[in-house]
Structure formats: structure tokens, C-alpha cells
Length: 311
Ligand code: NAD
Ligand code: UDP
Picture (cartoon, rainbow, N blue to C red):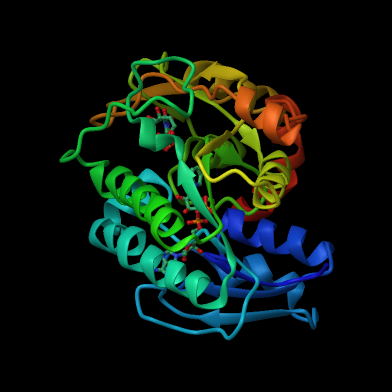
């Protein structure tokens, strides 16, 4: 049955794709965003969509969109450059912002799904990462503004479930990419694609041996929608287990763009995780979900978007 759904962080990369997927299923969607890292360009194709409305709002300030059936809480700076620039704001959105949206879910007896992250595992000592792993996080390092905000969010989401019976869900999202990724957010795919298309050197931090596992956005959104419909309250990893070194990732970008630029080395940021790969057994078993889009295919799907961004 179509529902009235609130999406926070709607003007961001993932939030805007989520709005599209929910509208395609016939739902009414209210998007909320304070535009600190997002952009209304990501929603401009919905201008004539009568079932979509947008509210410019910081979720750290209490707000009430009226009765909703479900809340997707995606508001938070997400790239290392953004959350370093907005460190205190990131801690507030992961604490006060999450509590404000949970209070709405409690008030309206709405379902609730929170966008958590593989960063909850920190620099993981267990590989691949299973949901039962508690992680290896530096609580006071430069990434802590994000990691600890997300870990607090998970704690408060579980508390609203346990103490108040709110129907909550937690997705631990692994590195996701695709069209609408902000071209200047410093993430590896946006940096490499923009650098390659501008004919600039690709900047590898450290020796490029650190790994990430890249999920294409359509796969991620499909998994999240399935999780929202499930009975699962504990965290579920959604990501692509195909693991790449950052050097291999740079080579894929060069292959897809046809760029001939060189690869240069820059200093590795402090506490940069050395490896990351989701164990997706739980998502496969519980949701019957697994990703379909390879890194090569996903980069090809994203090429025109990045070309439009850099021209
Ligand atoms: P994004 O920066 O494109 O989107 C985040 C959105 O939240 C932006 O539009 C921003 O303006 C908005 N926002 C931030 N603080 C807000 C506030 N206080 N009030 C209202 N809106 C606010 O990033 P994204 O990649 O789309 O990430 C979306 C969510 O998914 C984030 O919670 C992020 O932590 C999580 N996540 C993303 C990835 C990924 O690989 N993209 C991985 C793990 C987790
Ligand atoms: N990285 C890189 N060059 C860049 C941007 C990022 O080598 O221009 C590396 C970064 O050090 C990290 C990985 O790529 O090891 C992924 O970085 P990103 O910022 O995309 O996300 P993270 O997974 O670290 O949150």
C-alpha cells in the first residue's frame, strides 16, 4: 500500500536516488535537507512530481512534517572532506538529528531506517566485516566526528526500538558511487573520475594498497528498500563484496575514461582504514539481495554524469 514517507538528506547523493525509488513505487515523499553538502539539482527532475515535496530544514532543529508512515534518515555529511569541514555539525546530526527523527517515528508509529556505515567497523581487524564485529575505531582521531556520531546513532536507534518499540532498521552502507555523487566531495571515485576527465594526475593517498569494495547506487537502493520492508532490527551490511586496492580502482577509472594521465602519490590521511569488504551473507539470506553491477559497468554508467560535471 502506498505510504507517506519522510526522507532526510533528500538532496544528497543517496537520498535523491532513494526518493526516486520510493516515488516509483507510488509513495508520497517529503524530502528534508539543509543543503550543507547536498544540492537541489539532485531533485530538479522532480519539480513537476505532485507526490514529492521538499522542505529546507536542519534536522537538528525540531520539525514536524505531519503524519508519516515511514522515515529514512539519511542526513549527514558523508565524505571525509565534508565531515572534517563540518565536524561538530556531523556530531550534532548523528545525535540530536537522529533523536529528533526517532521522536517523529515514535509519535506517528512510523517505521524507521537509519543510514549507518561501514565506518562503524573503523580500521577493521576482522575481514571481511560481519555485522557481529564491534569494530576498531579511534574515538578521538580526525574521523571520530563521523564514526562516533554514526555509532551513537546506532545505539539510540536500538534504544528507541528496545524501550519504545519503534520499528527500526539499521543499514551499514559500504562505499557507494554513481551519478549525483558530488564531484568536489573528495571521495575516491569522484576525485579519480574528475581528474581523469580533466586530464589531471590521479591522486593516490599512500601506496594505494588499501582496499575498498564499491557498490553501484542502484544495487544499494534496492537492498535498502528490501531491508525497510523486513522484520530485521539489527544492523545489516549492504555493499558489494568485490574488493579493490585503490591502485586497481585508479586503473579501472583510466580504462573507462580512456585517460592517459599519470598516477601520483599523496600522503595517506590519519586512520585511513587499510581494508574494507562487507560480508553480505546476512543480506543474501534475509533479503534475497546481492549486488549485480560490476565496478567496470558502474563506472561506465556514471561516465556521462561526470563528463557533464567537469565540462
Ligand atoms: P551526501 O552528502 O550526498 O548526502 C547527505 C545529505 O544530508 C546532504 O544533502 C546534506 O545536505 C544533508 N544533511 C547533512 N546534515 C543535515 C542536517 N543537519 N539536516 C538536514 N540535512 C542534512 O552523502 P551521501 O553519500 O548521499 O550519504 C547519505 C547517507 O548515507 C549519510 O548518512 C551517510 O553517512 C550514509 N553513507 C553513505 C555512504 C556512501 O558511500 N555514499 C557510505 C556509508 C554511509
Ligand atoms: N583516496 C585516494 N585518493 C583520493 C581520494 C581518496 O587514494 O583522491 C583513498 C582514501 O585514502 C581511502 C580510499 O581512497 O583509502 C577511499 O576514500 P573515500 O574518501 O572515498 O572514502 P572512505 O572509504 O575512506 O570513507
